[in-house]
Length: 310
Image 1 (cartoon, rainbow, N blue to C red):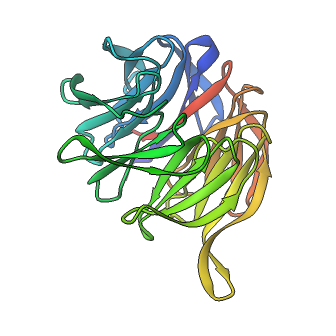
Image 2: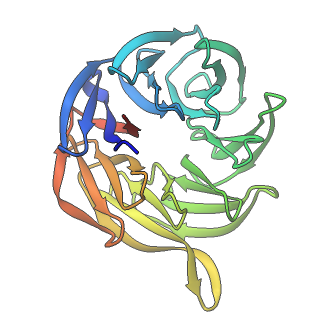
């Protein structure tokens, strides 16, 4: 089997660009101009395209990952700070949350055209998370302190349920069927039964937790804390008096204002975009500590994706 090349795609919010980083060289090999204020990114399962929300430009850029060029942009009159993105497993549909209009957009990725859009009726709908079976989409509403539930088959809002203050980061744990929610304003993690919408566990985190991402084996949840400049490591099956519970076991110091986090395919390394030091921290997942060297990026790197390709 041919060896695959590994890249990071890093969004530099304050200079309207994307850094393409070769992970073998650990350096930027290309910088691509984007729309205004690129925030979040989703890479198709086949690795061929990336969708980049340019929040202050009110557009979505489509990047061809073969030669790393912007080949299209998607616009709509109701785009007001388009932010969170999520792709179905087959890559056929892209869901987008537009924060200030609190609208959800569904995009057909075969045509890159908007198929449908509808409101959440909440305040500042921000991110997109699918359930494991892709029957539901969960949308954290920062201003309403709750989560909107969307029925994927019906393509409509079916529920809302309360969480902590300022929910932003969300992730679905497939084995336990729990939804993890990072509440940035009160610095907490809620672990929620995704069927009953009941909070099973609450955990204290660092200051202003903003994202959640699971390691490939779902053993760890990595949660960057923007204002305490560290990453909370939550073991999802920590043994506490004979019970398997989610438990914060460490906070790893990184750069200033950590944001986007991504694991490599093996789960041995994680990469953290540090918004205010303009670099990427490399975390050794086995040791749960930052490696001494960092990778330079552009100005205010935040959204980040991992890509393997020939």
